Image 1 (cartoon, rainbow, N blue to C red):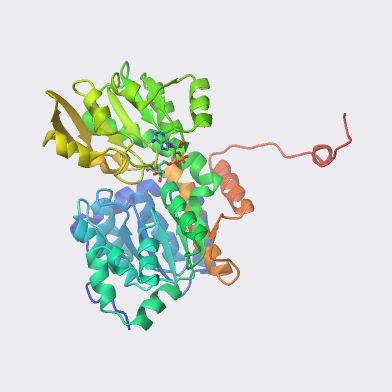
Image 2: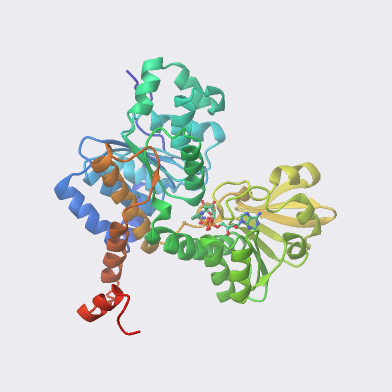
Length: 446
Ligand SMILES: NC(=O)c1ccc[n+]([C@@H]2O[C@H](COP(=O)([O-])OP(=O)(O)OC[C@H]3O[C@@H](n4cnc5c(N)ncnc54)[C@H](O)[C@@H]3O)[C@@H](O)[C@H]2O)c1
């Protein structure tokens, strides 16, 4: 039988728990939709007897989701989905006050990060919950016997398991949920290749997730992360936003609101046109590189800012990423041609390139989670209401959901919007019978 074989948590310091509890309670005040779900979960226990492994940013909002899932009956293990995004006080609070198995330490190295993924897998989940598909990715490398593609801590552990145990680990997962765009793209690629081993609910695809979390959450918290890391004045600066998807739209809006001249770079003509008509200047990265003061990538793509762009940048240019992985700025290329890095402030590193200095924030990792606190609780309220409902949906419909990437049913998505409006004290009109009839007809009022 597979056992966790190591202690049931690995966190920085349990003595930080009081601070984590206070901050988690503060976030909870702004999460009324999740609160209602947690209350229903406590009554109905839809996740009773289920083991759930989550790989999410360990923040105050995630803490409230974990507590809601536990209220629903789940036995929860949590690891980080990014080495820099853990709030150590929150991890301590979850362990001490809720007995949740947390494996996450802010700033953990590559080995520890994957040792924590291993610990989450060793929980033998019935349901996994990912932000970037790390748990599901590892489970699929096990299923496909591609052990060389596993990070060493996971591979070593898997090698100790018998073939039957490995199979049980994968077959035991009734379904999974995925939080972010990059994870959903990967999972859809797996489904297309016919290798997906269980159903996945793409939480990111819910309207109450990407329309709000990616746009307003990433927009605000990315600007917050840049400002906390650098204390730079945004007003009057030139901010280059790479990618005008949901996150890019939100960040461009906030940068403009703070007084920046915003330039958008895109590869999709429709998005570029939308940015142009939204009043932004649209340019190639090669053009933008020469004039930008701050560059932020939000594309989910690799090598968006390359060495040739960095060579063209002005003295003092600041580079940050808010896309899921630290692959958008070519830091490997920079390391080959530049001198550095020199740490000048927390999360700010200076590089000398062609006789000038450029600054990279948070090692190219998600700036909003590394240097700030991630998204405000009010927006995560909806994202995590989706996560909680997705977990319940997996349990209820495990037998009928195919091995594919699914959306949460539209009526649940709209119900989350309705509850959020209600909590905000906003009322909306109802269709009159005449309006209903008109909208369903093709021959009235022409
Ligand atoms: N920082 C956070 O907290 C946070 C929150 C949500 C999502 N994300 C991540 O942010 C990334 C973007 O998410 P999204 O929901 O906005 O995705 P999206 O698909 O809506 O937008 C991505 C945009 O980038 C563009 N793009 C791709 N390659 C490009 C390139 N080389 N140059 C310029 N533009 C390019 C695409 O055309 C698209 O318009 C993903 O990695 C996602 O996982 C981060």
